[in-house]
Length: 224
Image (tube, rainbow, N blue to C red; front, side):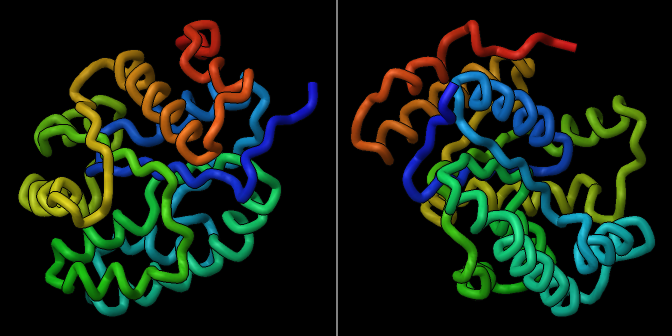
């Protein structure tokens, strides 16, 4: 089967506070899009590169100064854009991002940095064609973190997550579509499929045959 392409590619960013279900949705939605013949690359930020590794370590050992944290994030994102995101878009693929610069705006904004300046600092990063913010209450997010056997890190306490959530939900800041992520994973996937379908059609300006498969139940990957 010839791989379907989207001219210029398609950036689909999945955001939300910790425990919202971003990684689960990125994987499931990636499977749906591959099933209809699209090339898909899934990226996660912070990455596993040099700067991303430093950031992940700081989440365990203790947060960096906000300015230093921002510097590491921007270095990590520039590397990600150059080495992964831009090439994927050049191939006409869907680039699914499990966290992207909106997390930078929310988490460093919650630490006291100016959100507009944070947006400006990220203007080198391709803007999402679709930005989904998975919304859950901070207590629910933390409950899910505990349920999967993880220990909350230095970013993950109720007060900080509440501040981050408020920024994610601020009207007109991020041009995001909010999805109620308190629902079960299958329901969240169904909503995301429909939103992706509409966004892809909007970008293409037409309805190629393959795009109809995005919302077909036959494309829903089996549950583990």
